[in-house]
Length: 403
Image 1 (cartoon, rainbow, N blue to C red):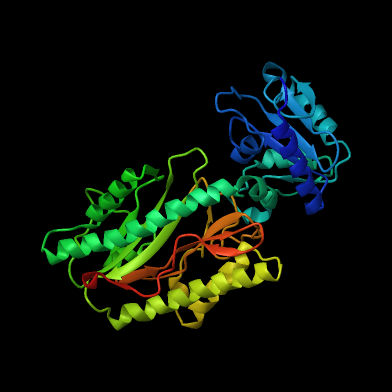
Image 2 (tube, one colour):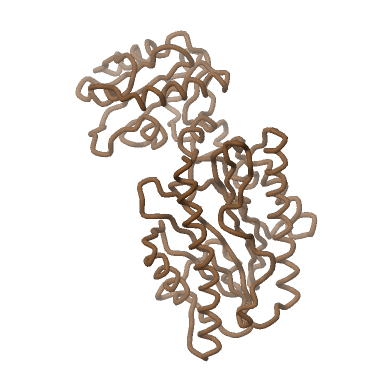
């Protein structure tokens, strides 16, 4: 099988990234699709029959090495490099020794102490098998995001269009609530969800699951989901949180994901304004932190950004009510393979790198009362400019009946 020039170029870029990480190589291993990062980087066709263990070792310099089982010995022929074939478990171990050569430190989809569980997919037995050679295994987390989370210029352009529609849909959803309440017609969280889905359908957008509309105490549950059977009516004097996300129905489409809040009235009570202002301050401080770091070419990690936002909320005495990470990577998946802004649920040590996107979405959730989250989407371009992709950020709670 002829190896395409694009894959040769990709491998060269990977080798450059490996050298930048200061390691000897990257060992990509998969068994029956258990490692989606490896199959993604290796560009394994979806139709390919993969039932045996396979390895692709990319050294910092030199020729990549393949190790495949004899009955599936053509599975990696589309990749550049030298091929070794194994049959027995003994020849697999010998072959693994052969492809790793003199490597002393290599990257795999592993995270020490499971710090970043999203990328820690290599089983303990395989780690033991590689380490028996006195090889040090480091996390491939930063390598993965360079080749799985980076957006193309086209993806950025198309995402701007999606983001504009998402912002318009958000405003229209609040107007829909206001119109129904003013007309004294019943409107539920589920009705709002379905209104949003119809808007997305008009634009041929898709979502991994339907968006969220939460009223009052339901908004204190960050992952509340209304259904046709379980939902709450929206009335005058209610607090409403809407979290919506979508992408173009395209192979390379990337998500837009925003959260706004509103009050069904003509003026917003002080208790909501107070909490919103704290959340907004945390959001904006985190954005400014990223912006300043990129401008000064200072390395920052996802956990560092989380610390900034969380510090603001803790300063105001609401730390225990901020119960999730500050943000997540965005790409072709809603929660993608780049750095998450997290030093709570996990300690995300991945660097924030150019040409990737992520949300900033701090929140305060008061059980039995209400919850406020303000979510924006951020993209760092190749020149390290930090861009707000989903239009202007919310600056105050929407007065729904004043729209």
